[in-house]
Image 1: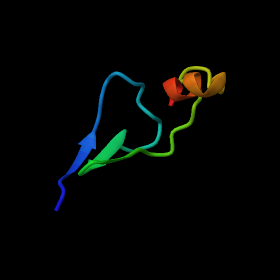
Image 2: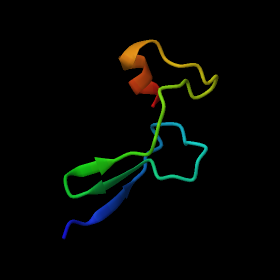
Image 3: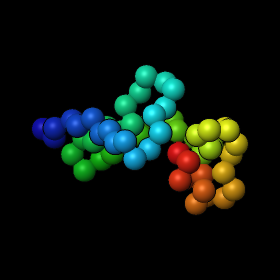
Image 4: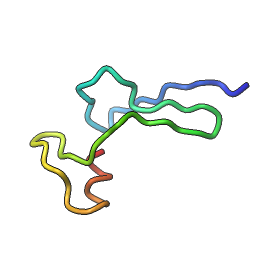
Length: 55
């Protein structure tokens, strides 16, 4: 049975909801419902690259 691992890093801003940043189970990674919004002003990023960076 694969080991469940909670993934956390200081390289991204902490979310406001009480959720882990990610959970790894075997070779799968599960992330909570993050959005591509700027962490300070809440504006949606321009395009997929910027939105991915913000998420």
